[in-house]
Image (cartoon, rainbow, N blue to C red; front, side, top):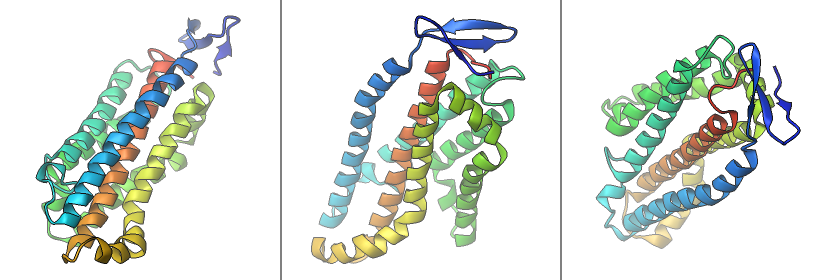
Length: 242
C-alpha cells in the first residue's frame, strides 16, 4: 500500500491493519547526508591518495594497503558490510509477511553481506592461487547484483514508492562498485600505465595501483549503499509495510 501524505507533512505508513503517522524525515536525512557523505568519501579518497603516493615513492604504507588483510581500508570495508548485514538482519527480525523489502530479499542481503564482510576481513578469495576461484567470487557478487532488478523488481518498486532517494543512492553505490570491479583494468590500461612512467621508475606498481583503484571503488560504493540503507531505515521508521 502506498503511504498517504498527512496534512502536517508527515507520512502515513501502513502497519498491519492500521496506519501509523511517521514524521517526514526525508529533508532531515538529506541534510545530514549532504554533510556526512562528502566527509566520509573525502576521507576514503585521502586514504587512496596516500597509498598510491606511497606506491609511486616506493614506500607504501602497510596499514593503507588496499589489498591487504586487516588493514585500515580492509577494516573499513568489512565494517560497512557487517553494518549492512546487521541492519538488514534487524529489519528481518521485525518483519512480517508484508515487510518492505521482502523477507527473501532481506535474507539474501544478510547472507551476502555477512560472507562479503568475512571475505574482506580475511581476504578469503586471495587464499587460493587459482584465477578460477577468484573469478568465481566475482561471479557470485555480480550475480547477486544482477538478481536485484531481475528477481526482486516488486521489492524495488515498493522501496521506490516509500522513498525513491534511498533507491537512487543505493543504485549509485552499486554502480560505483561495478565501475571499480569491472572498470579497473580499463582504467589501468588507459590512465595508470601511461602515467606510471612519469610518476616512478619502479616496475610492478601498475597492478598494485589497479587493485587500489578497484578496492577504492568498492569502498566508496559500499559507503553510498550503506547510507542508502540507513536512510531507508530512518525514513520509513520501524518496519514500514507496503
